[in-house]
Length: 120
Image (cartoon, rainbow, N blue to C red; front, side, top):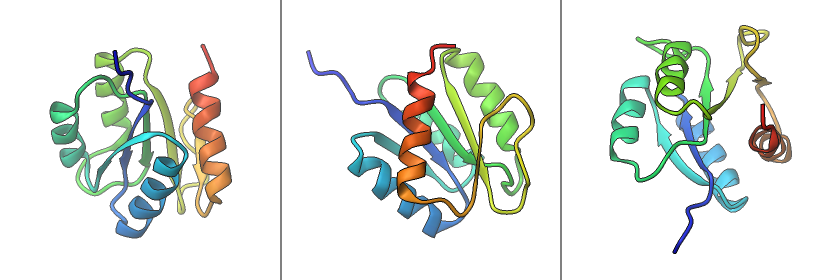
C-alpha cells in the first residue's frame, strides 16, 4: 500500500510566495496543493485525494478570510495543523502559529515539521 506524504494546502495571493513555498516544501518531501484564493483552495480540497495535514495560508486574503478557511477545514479534518503567515500583520490571532514574512526556506520547513510533530 502506498502512503502519501503529508499534504500541505498553501494559500497565498502572491505568485512568487506560492512558487517559492511549493518548491521548498516539495523538495523537503511534502505534497503541496497550491491556491491563490480561498475559493480556489476549496476547489483544490474537493479534488484532493486523502486528507490535508497542514494549512499554510497568508492571513490577508482578498474577498474571504484565511481564518474562515481554517475554521471550515478544521471542521472537516480536526487533526489539521494551521500555520498563518503575513508580511503586514504582526501576528496571528491566538492560539494559531504564525510565520512572519520574509522567512528562509529552512525556517519554513522547520516550522511545518514542528507542526506535524506536535501531537496536541
